[in-house]
Amino acid sequence: MTPNVTPLVAGNWKMHGTRASLDQIKAIAEGVKGPLAAKVQSLLCPPATLLYVATALCDDSPLAIGAQDCHETASGAHTGDISAEMIADCFATHVIVGHSERRTDHEESDALVRAKAEIAHRNDLVAIVCIGETEAERKGGRTLDVLKTQLAGSVPDGATAANTVVAYEPVWAIGTGLTPTVADVAEAHAFLRAELARRFAGEGVAMRILYGGSVKPGNAKDLMGIDNVDGALVGGASLKSEDFLAIYRAYEDLTA
Ligand code: PEP
Image (cartoon, rainbow, N blue to C red; front, side):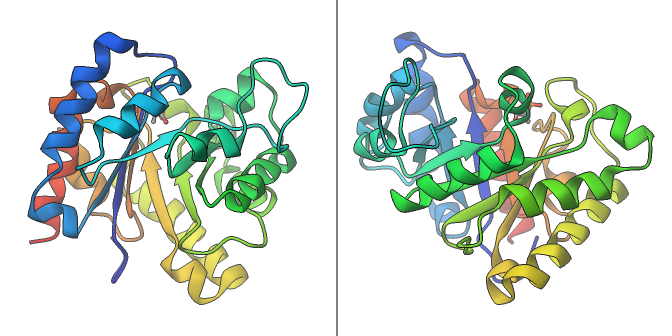
């Protein structure tokens, strides 16, 4: 955790979820009501098809709704893409950019991720910028170099603590059940904090840095209790409301 920074617990449903899953969104929206909401922010990023209905379901809930990606331009002939304006038009407030699955499946570069974050900002969306090393890069001792390059290339100059969240997601930990050690997470987050502080001064000190990669109810407290870990980006475990809420509630102890 970082002093005076409100943590964020965010769920990424990826390409999962149909209208049948709206009950899960409702349960999460209900479950995050309560005193903890004053101390911890919660966010769910369902597929684009559910965005508009999801924000309607969260009308009276502190649960924010975000998208999983946006196009880097405002509009145009880009079949199948969605724009930041469309996301904001659904009353969503956040968008994930540069998730490793986008970087791999769609060969997204740091420059493209940065352009996506910039257009998110122009539409008053908070950009959640994902970075992380592959298994080969970690084994080759290149983790911090990779993080430095991705952070510098993907986060726009206009980033502030209010409009940008960085998510550190080791690629090899996503969806695998593997997690780095507490010491490894602490090292990566301390490094990212120093880089952000150097580039963005006070804004970088207060910018949230989430950890993502096989966060589960059983390991959430250990991971989110690490210095400079300001929340979690949760994939698989966010699909079940009880698991997502158990992760969110890990902060009951951490903020007590
Ligand atoms: C993710 O999709 O960003 C993620 C971290 O997935 P999981 O929690 O399933 O590893």
